[in-house]
Image 1 (cartoon, rainbow, N blue to C red):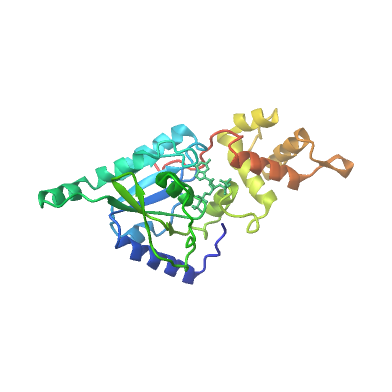
Image 2: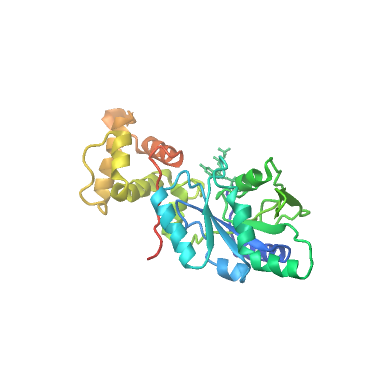
Length: 288
Ligand code: G4P
């Protein structure tokens, strides 16, 4: 899904989420485990305004497990509960209702002390497009929910989805925008396929991807495409283009005169990367 975010859309999206916050006990902030910073909304603290929150690192099946552990420790050090899941298979998704109850245990205990029957914890999933909100909602619901209102500016009747007996979710997630005025954020999101390629050029995204991977993940790249020499200097554009040409030759992407078809090569690199064929990759480490 591509959304053109204009200032008006952002204001409306923010208001919609803030209206929904009145109905819920807890926000579930969904981030992409490969880019926890770039998939984060720049105004999240302001928007959630102190609402209890569970951070969920989604697509952890595609992310570097060691760095995911570091992110979990980082969020814990910031006082947040965090769980890393794979919504496409459901791995560790079952921890979400448990963690939600843990976060709200004081509120639940206060209600019990007043003799109130504990009701299901009410949650709202929030996150940028493509982070996996619908997939996670369907996974938690145990069935496919038609998300007809899944766009900013379009409203429909809210419905609660039961997640077991102890949690309920609003069926329409809160859609947030990324910090797209930051070029690096734009490229990282494009690289993992969260920004459609109409916005940025395929060759540029693949160039960016190879440059990012050439350092920390060179071995995976070399293994996949049978490459010999790593670039001497990953900051040197010519060196990166040379690596792309090597990949193109290995994959038989040639045009007349034996030149490498860079566009076709770029498509292959990005498809492999997004499908996890270049291994489990995380592009951002915690900021300490
Ligand atoms: P959104 O509502 O936040 O916009 O995201 P959505 O659930 O539509 O998910 C976006 C894409 O990410 C989908 O792939 C979905 O299958 C995939 N996805 C979601 N969660 C996970 C996860 O934990 N791991 C992996 N590997 N993928 C995940 P798609 O290619 O757009 O669609 P499709 O191939 O599933 O049909």
